[in-house]
Image (cartoon, rainbow, N blue to C red; front, side, top):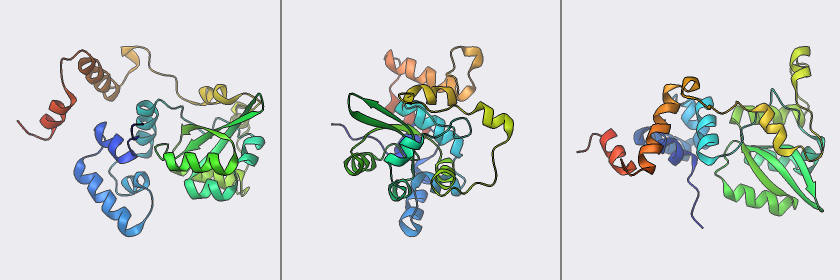
Length: 219
């Protein structure tokens, strides 16, 4: 089985950071600890929102916006707080089919397959990864596990929250995530460039290696 790329490699390949920035973040991580993604954000190399969009697109995973969804108590009970804290994850919805349970898990680092495997082993529940920002996951852990809220959500926001029903797993997230761009008119420059590169590469017009060499200034 092919190894899944880590966050730093994905962001580098997407052109959101440079090799120098990644090396600096990894060096800081070795010294001070923390996650690569949050380290890159802290050092000002990339924004959390850009990491979220990139991981969702590159890994083809749904994204979770906790401002728009209500976490299922059944999902919360399936994943202990210590596991949520250890891996910076947040269970969102639980689905049961023919006696088998699966949990939709919002992860700050969905590339961490060791975390997925350990969570599945310790809980006995199949993990369906989704992606969210680290700050959003930590805030959700405080809100739902520790009941630490700054106050109830505004009435308008509370009414817009998607309730979680049994078997509502993927539908829930689709309600909360941004709609995919379906036309050139709705795409921004960043999306257009990445789409163009994918098309040209798929048709053999360019090679990614040549493009990366050109970006590094190599002939």
